[in-house]
Length: 74
Image 1 (cartoon, rainbow, N blue to C red):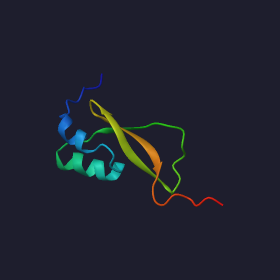
Image 2 (cartoon, one colour; image 1 turned 135 degrees about the horizontal axis):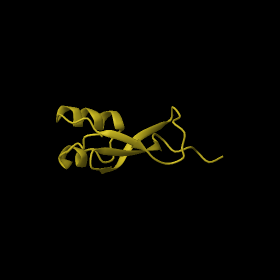
Image 3 (tube, rainbow, N blue to C red; image 1 turned 30 degrees about the vertical axis):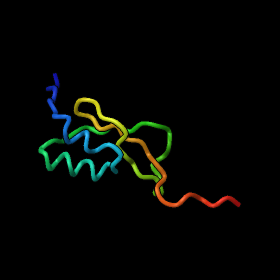
């Protein structure tokens, strides 16, 4: 049986919108090691950044976003 972790929502709230690596640094600094759940159908390509879009209990929920300049229309 797995032990249910009791995480304070404070550091997790601060992570919304941040890249996953930055969010993990904030959580670790607060002594927490959350799980990460990736959602969506985008592949993890090099031009996509995983960002935190939500949190539930001890889990950061992330989706991939294209960062940078929009492509120019031809």
